[in-house]
Image (cartoon, rainbow, N blue to C red; front, side, top):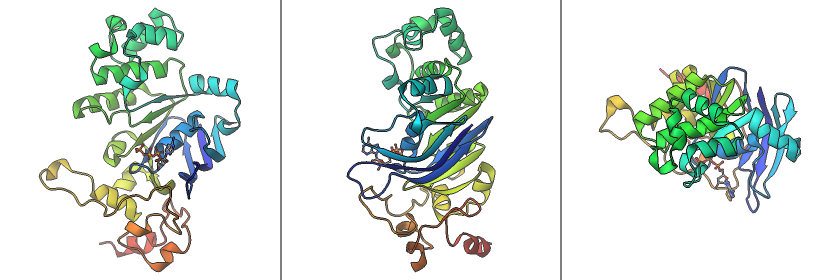
Length: 303
Ligand SMILES: Nc1ncnc2c1ncn2[C@@H]1O[C@H](COP(=O)(O)OP(=O)(O)OP(=O)(O)O)[C@@H](O)[C@H]1O
C-alpha cells in the first residue's frame, strides 16, 4: 500500500539530511511502527507521506501510495490524496479543532458530511450523537482525540498516519485510544512514537529510526526478544518497566546529534558502547534488518 524508497529530506541551513535514505513499507492490513528519540525524523517522514513538508525542504526519493508517487503529485492530486488516501492524527487534539466550534460543526463543515453521517462516525469512535453539540473545552483530551479520529475516518482513508496520538493523554485514556485504533481496522496504519513499548502493543513490524536513518526493522516480537542494533537494545533497556518500579533504567548516554553535525559512518557511533574505529569509516547498510557492522558478532557473543 505504502512504499517509501530512499527518501531524503534536507532542510535549509543544515549539514546533513533530517531524513537520510529511508525506505519503509506498509502492506495491506498491517500496522507499522516508526520509533525513535526526539529529532530522529519521524514526524518529517509522516508529513512527507501526506505531502506536507516544511517550506524550502528538499525531498528526493519516492513515496508510492497505491502506485502513485506523492512527491510528484500536483495540488489537486494532493488534496485528493489527503482525504481519500491517507489521513493523519496528531499528538494534540486541541490544536486540531478550533475552541469556538461545536464538534458537529467541525465534522460537517471541515469534512463536508451531513449530521447523520457525523453522528454515525461519533458512534464508531465510542462517542454519542449528543456530543455533536459540545465545544472542545467541554470534552476530555481522550474524547477530543476520538473526535479527531472520527474526522480522519470520514474520507475512508486507506492509510492512517498516527503521530504520537496518545502522548498527551493519561495512561488509562492512552490504552482506550490504542484499543480503539486496533478495533477500527483501517486498511493500513503507520504509528509514530518515541515509545518502543507502546509500539509493541499495536504494531506488527517496527522501524527504529535514529538521526534520519533506519537502524533496525523487524517484526515487533523478534525486535523485543532479540534486539540486534545497539541503539534498539539501548532504547529497550531505557524503558521503565512496571515490575521494576522505583529503579530508574539506564538511559543511553549522550544526546542525539543535531542537524548541524556532520556524521561520518554510523550516526549512533558516538553513543554506542560497542563502537570500533571501523564504525565511523562508512555508513552501514541494512543487512537482515539491522544497520550495524557488528550486529552478527554481538549476537554471537550474547549468552
Ligand atoms: N519546520 C522545520 N524547520 C526546521 N527544522 C525542522 C522542522 N521540522 C523538523 N525540523 C528538524 O528536523 C529534525 C527531525 O525532526 P522531526 O520532527 O521529524 O523528528 P521527530 O523524530 O518526529 O521528533 P519529535 O518526536 O521531537 O517530533 C529535527 O532536528 C528537527 O529540529
